[in-house]
Length: 219
Image 1: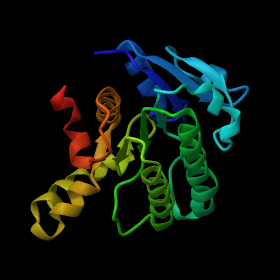
Image 2: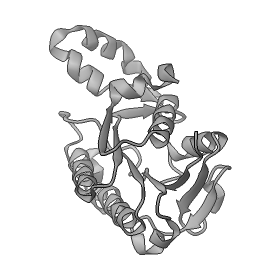
Image 3: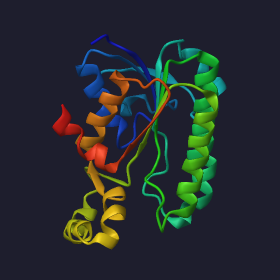
Image 4: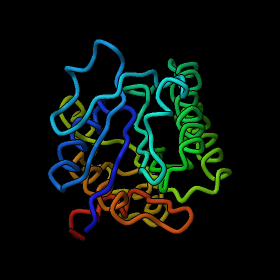
């Protein structure tokens, strides 16, 4: 495996804190965007790049042609009350990342979106769908991951829903939606992201919950 140069936005978040050590441990060179004063929050194994995820001009020149850009920025614990933030933070940061990727000429763009369609999280899904559309319009080879809820430290309460999910998965009328909107672990997400980064697609690749769940078995 050839080591890759990877630029990550949202590196201090739930997924980023686990992904960076995994990538560094696999021999990749990681640079991580971070706000001024938050450098200490970055995990070991990366070079910090100070900038603003909502303004590509503050970091685009730090991305090199041929890099892999991984965009992880997003509002924590999405809820209907955060609808405005989905546009001013989630969507805005994604569009800025797309702009930076185009300017730099990145080789591969990786974006964590959300499972869809779904009966809830309408505003959240709309913002993520617009970001996906922007990514598609660039023509850059891209991987779009669509998890629903990522379990991990501080995010374990949904495990109480697992029995309900198991039941729904065996009922024909709810089977497909239960699988598409299922829970995934942080280990599964990291394994999926590592595999995606190391195996870029020729065009656009969509990775759904069932595929994320199978990531560890495939390693």
